[in-house]
Length: 441
Image 1 (cartoon, rainbow, N blue to C red):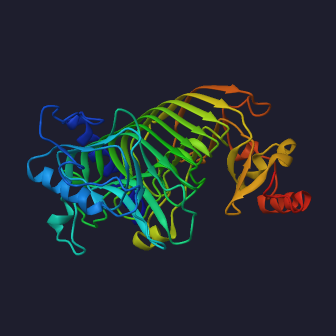
Image 2: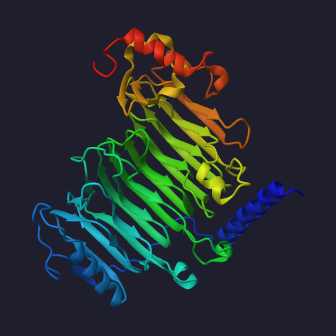
Image 3: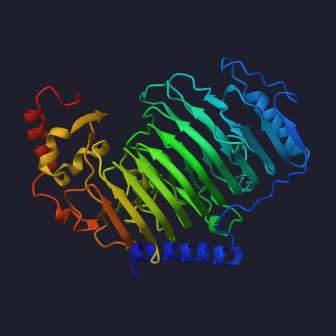
């Protein structure tokens, strides 16, 4: 066996290890641990939180309250209705953050920086020991109380070098995020990101927790998401369930394991009722170099998106090859499926220019370059796009169409279904034909 085959065999063994771990655990989503009769604190009355319309950074008040509640063994922390400015807040084990309906959180986000509002991970020093790398939090939640709360960064324009996430989940077990609306403005990064440890430790697969594990994300939405991002992206997750999630723009459920590192991969992912409107697609599968486990999605609605589902290789990144010269195209495990897909035609989809040859020429006058000179706003193309080239297989079941004139005869479209030619040449011709009116209506 040569080195490349050995590496691939080793990675598949790691998948089996994680699958066996799931079989032993038998937990594929969040298990409620919040005690309705337990300790409860209020951020305003107990810790002095001020509703000042997000004029001052009150992150320290949030963190002090969470730390105090965790030190007392955990409990519920009420965030009363208001408008607050925070960022970089770490949850701790057994703390449940209950944010009253219509509360608005505006991130503390200095110009030129990257920020995260809530962090579900153990807080570590910049230099860690192997034991500190293994630390994790558990039994935590962030949920709307009486309805959805809002994280709003819609006033910010996208700028190079800046990025924002509402929540990042890393070394956390048994977590819930529920009732969250994110108001975006086509900024960098998905609103929610699930990711693994960055440790290079060879024993990571034997750790108790190595990535966002045993979680549920439900009843969450994002508005005006960038076509390059969306609501949630998974780089590393195990036994996580998604339900009733929505994206206006971008991708609702982005199973694109495209981060760089030795631990990137997802296992035992389930999803139900995934909707995207005026975006790229509802579900995106792109393994890059990760050998992923099983993904099961039931219920997809695509309204005026380019596709409902896209499946591709993603490609091995150069940065990954520097870490692992033997890295090869990744996959999703056999048994993965997406079923009960409904696709509604519209002309406000986000379409990457490199798929221009898939767009019926009849719709060329309905195309407008809207985002970063890379994405059109234009007509829906079809139900499922498959560019996997047979490297892995996702079972597609029960596809229905509404309002389409083209591409209803094939549920799954491949590059062979597109017109011949080179997309840069087609784009150039389109620009010449369109003249100066490439971005307006």
